[in-house]
Length: 113
Image 1 (tube, rainbow, N blue to C red):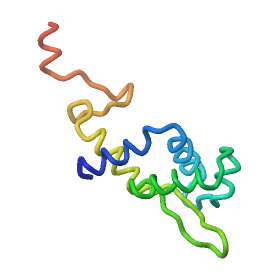
Image 2 (image 1 turned 180 degrees about the vertical axis):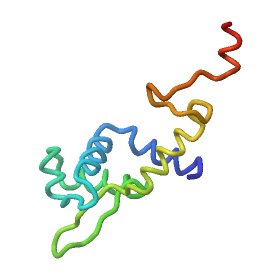
Image 3 (image 1 turned 120 degrees about the vertical axis):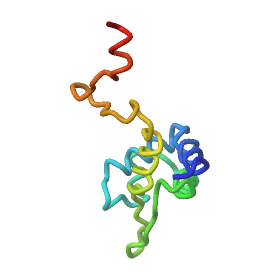
């Protein structure tokens, strides 16, 4: 992921309603949710929801697809994974960051001795 793409995705998520919509889509999984159900779940009027879904789609975090007379939205999990990967790319100096898996870096261990 390029820096500008990460900035756009993070900017889209830096708004309370869009973050709620995105989290709801993540929870819904790959099958997604109809726009009407999203609006009902979050008590959003259609115009407001459309605006926020468009922002998420522009940022590469959501996708819409037509199913009959409904538009089904889902999180773009591939781009979500890219964003998380971008954010954690240099995490913990290449070592595992999970508790219990961490090992102290040799240089730090020597300084304390």
